[in-house]
Length: 48
Image (cartoon, rainbow, N blue to C red; front, side):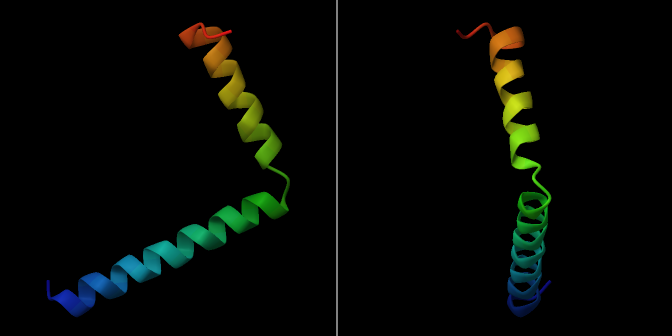
């Protein structure tokens, strides 16, 4: 794979990732993800 194609794919993946993050944020999923992260820390790892 040449350098231009690799760079293009990296940019496309970065843009798609940003769009997905913004979409999830707009839908209000930040709170859901945060609650799951807190539960993992409190229940599985034993922090707190």
